[in-house]
Length: 259
Image (spheres, rainbow, N blue to C red):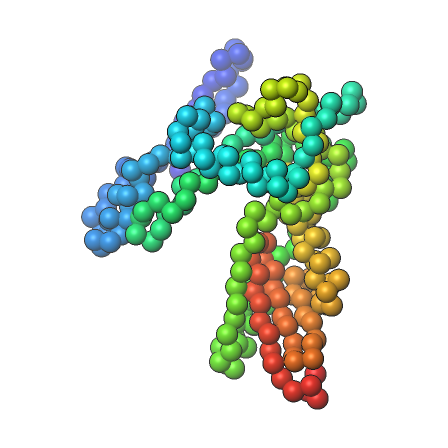
């Protein structure tokens, strides 16, 4: 990857840092693509995703996307506005924009997501453990192989806004979202009650939440893979494999005497 060297403007000692040269998709040629791939790429590059709030605000498509995201956060009671305690620090947040496309290249959805600047968090103060177990590939392959051999079906579901469901145990204070500052209380900050994308502990909080729910409803974790949950029922066995926000579900129906 090509690199270029820059000098920091406020440092005369010539401290150097390298930056990656970004090759835009428009620079690639499409001679080797078949017709429908070429049409897809042409439609994809017609619209550019905003890189910051200032470039997105005022565009009805992105305004609606941000309104939808804020409505989801409000419905989830993600935070409450409070005065920042003297001994606490506040972290920032930003908007991230993404255009989702259909298989033919047409726009499926304009997605705006509010992301906390988790890199400003301090270990031991506003986060502890960050590890979140995910299913091992050997587990997924073994289950798929078993279902294929038996001719059984597999159900897959995706949890929408998965990290917003985790319960936050630590005290985390965040600035009010750009463009959605409460005009009556502009100096207040958001005390997070739920996890938010970008927080270091967000994946673990979600894993704890879904794991606790499944165990409460009679599932047991496997000693070989903590993301594999099994429940024996009157009709058979239910198997659930969790891979971040994807759940693979299979119910094996069998005679009661075989359970």
